[in-house]
Image (cartoon, rainbow, N blue to C red; front, side, top):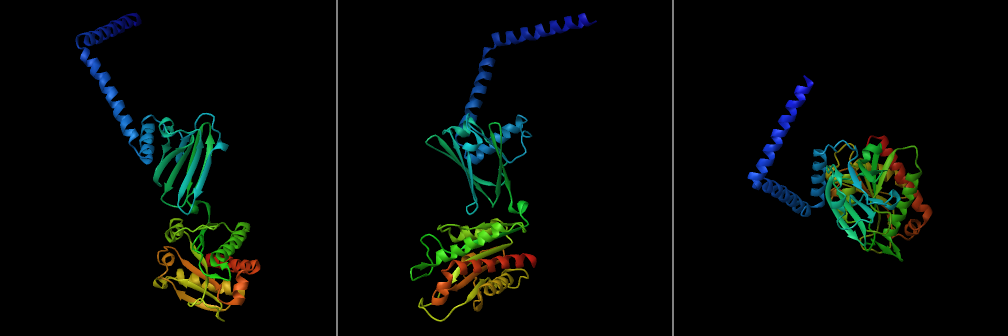
Length: 360
C-alpha cells in the first residue's frame, strides 16, 4: 500500500513539474512579469521608506515586524539595534523633562542608520522622531507628548526603552519653578540679581527634597542653572507631568524700584479659580503661612495673579511666592545670605508636605 502511494505521489509531482516547465517555456512572459512585479514592489517600498519621517518609519518597521511574528519578541516600548561593536556604556540617553524630549547618542551610527537597523516599538506617546548624524555619531531625538521617566535596559545588541509616567514611580508629583534666568535677570539691586536669589532658594529646596527618604515625592524643576525656559515650557512641565502642585519662586520690589521700608512675603494665586476646594487659593494660603513662619517675615497677604501667564494657564494648583522685597535693604541682605535662603526653602518644603497631607 505504501509503495503504491509513494508511486502515485511521484507521478503527481512529475506532472506538476512538467506543467510548470512547459508554462515557463510556452509563456515566458509569465515569469518575466512575476520578477518585474516583485522588483517594482521592492522599489516602491524603498522609495516610500526613503520619504518617510522618523515616526512613519517606526510605524512601518513595527508593522513589518508584526507580519514576521516579531511583535511578541519584546515587551518594552522601543527596541533600538546598536551598530556592531557599540556597547551599552557607549550610548547616552538624556531625558529633558522641560521640553519633553529624549536625546539618544549612538557612536558609529552613519546617515543610513535607521534604514540599516530598523527601530521598532509603540509610538503611542511619541509626537516626533528625528535622526541626525554628525561625524559618525548618530543622535536620535524623540519628542514625547508628556513628561516621562525613561527606563532603559540592554540585551545583546539591542537597547530597550520604556516610558513611565511620574505617577507610576511616585506617590505625589511637584513642579518647582525658579523665576527668571539667563538674560531675564528680574529685579537688580546693588549688583544682586533676582534670578540668582530665586535659583539659590530652589537649590536649597532641592537639597532638602533629595535628602527626604520618608516621602515618595517626585520633584521636577524648570531650571537648576542659569537657563531661562520660556513661560510655556515652565507651565507645561507642570501640566504635562499632571503635577499635584506647581510652585514658582520669585522676589519682589516696589513699583518705583526705589528702596523703601516695605518688606515681607506675598503669594500670588489664580483668583479666577479661587472657589476650588483644594485649588490655587488654598495652596497659596499654605505657602504664605509656612514661609512667613520659617522666615519671621511680614505677611503681605495673597495677591490675585491671573494676569501672570504661568498662573493663568496652569491646569494644576499653582502658587507664586514672592519671598521678600529686594528694595528693602535689610531684606535684600537677608535674601542674599545662604542661611536665609535655606530658611525660605525649609518653609516651602513644609508647605509642600502640608499641602499633600491636606489632600492635594
